[in-house]
Length: 265
Ligand SMILES: NC(=O)c1ccc[n+]([C@@H]2O[C@H](COP(=O)([O-])OP(=O)(O)OC[C@H]3O[C@@H](n4cnc5c(N)ncnc54)[C@H](O)[C@@H]3O)[C@@H](O)[C@H]2O)c1
Image (cartoon, helix red, strand yellow):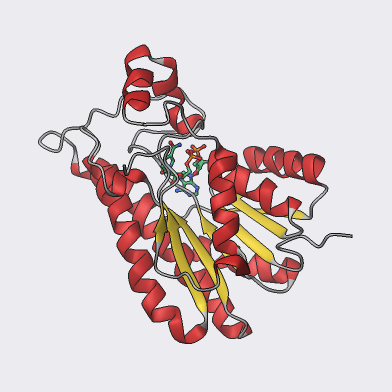
């Protein structure tokens, strides 16, 4: 019988109740990993865990945690260890497109010019998208270091780390921060054999882009920016994350891969 690429591995995924995080959870479970998904909203987590179990037959637990709060992130990692014994991979996928974004709710506009943006909104986006990723990285890594077998951390940045989107400076800056955090933390983790990489997706069909998908101008804007002329699927990002999570990428650290339909051309 073929052995899964993540057989025996335990993976913690933030933002795991929806979109890219959920797709990673399903794809990783198919490859034999034991999964802990984390997000905000217990009912959403219950639904996502059931979906993963029923479609993959995998072992899944869930822990509610807001990535903005260090004690909640620390408790998430501890509960993953209590449940499955160790942590081998962490995927930091929790994120928002703007301060007012609520996953799954109808999208409010991305038009938040810096000249007018309330400071609280700026701080909120940075807190979730950048500080939340840092907290997820360091609390996951602390267990990996204690275990002594190395590990792999995958941060979900965005093509917006490279391409400035008008009206979304907060989002772009947070994602550029994730790319540099990934490099800086990768340096610190070299001696522990913990690899730290990031993914910078282009426009992907998830609740985060639903508002743009449903709006003629928004859809046209996304397609015009994407040479392949279509949006990416969450599975395409999950497959990239799978590569970074498993030993096939054993010589890669501090790097960001950009599955984005040719936007770097
Ligand atoms: N969809 C895209 O086109 C796209 C492109 C590039 C990057 N990304 C990034 O991918 C990641 C996943 O986004 P998605 O498209 O799957 O959107 P999504 O809304 O489907 O998923 C994001 C998840 O993060 C969770 N989350 C938000 N704030 C949180 C918090 N404080 N604590 C814990 N969880 C929180 C949400 O509840 C949601 O379940 C995000 O970091 C996003 O910025 C998305």
